[in-house]
Length: 294
Image 1 (cartoon, rainbow, N blue to C red):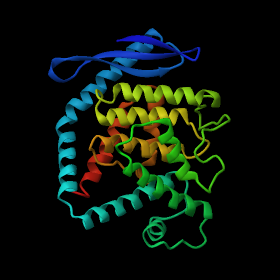
Image 2 (tube, rainbow, N blue to C red):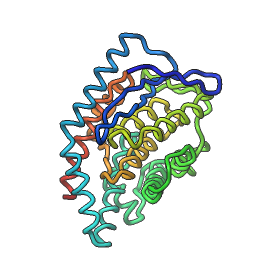
Image 3 (cartoon, rainbow, N blue to C red):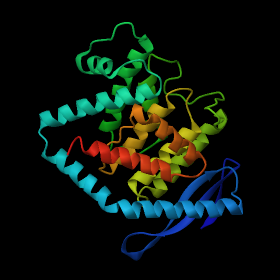
Image 4 (cartoon, rainbow, N blue to C red):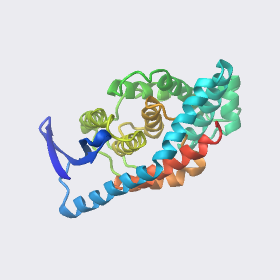
């Protein structure tokens, strides 16, 4: 393992480079973006241990991942048009309820179901919550309908635009000011464009070599750490996480509101360089949700 430095627009960025064995006994150098500051020696030791834990995790779960993917694809292939429509309707409703509820929406699952499936708006609920629920369905369907697209800045901004349209004036635009998320202070607004480009570059360089769940988890955690929007980061980030998985023929993972404490804890640990808790959490959701459609 070694550190590689890139210079972009006069600013230096640091990557950890790890040589790992892939198919047919070939070796591949995989980069992990670590930020604006060079790691210290003690950090390199910690990162090395983390990489070993990630390898062990996927080695232990390899057969289960293959089984999940196989069963999911078989389910999709054998389903009738009516069954597929019903499956997607249920998934959109549940996913929209959970992702909005995590962000503080007042709509219950029943409210969400009536609104999205029957067009009935709940009474005495904030108009913003209702509009964002309708908008999220549009963003979700846009994500699902564009799996042949490449991940890009334009794709990310379009998801945000669909989510926040007629809700906030900055729909489809990166934030222009500083924000704080708990104890985390994300990057300055003027750095967002470059940092998003760095993240996208990392994604495209590693998408063929990393396990899909690792790729999705690392991208999601890095995206949430950048916090590129004033609002909507979690919802856009969870759509992007599933965009990565669905492109690789894996089932969607719904991050449930009832499990949000574990999810937020995993995000916080990822901020400190420990991605394993997020991998374990996402895997547990994938495995549990598989039981509902097998």
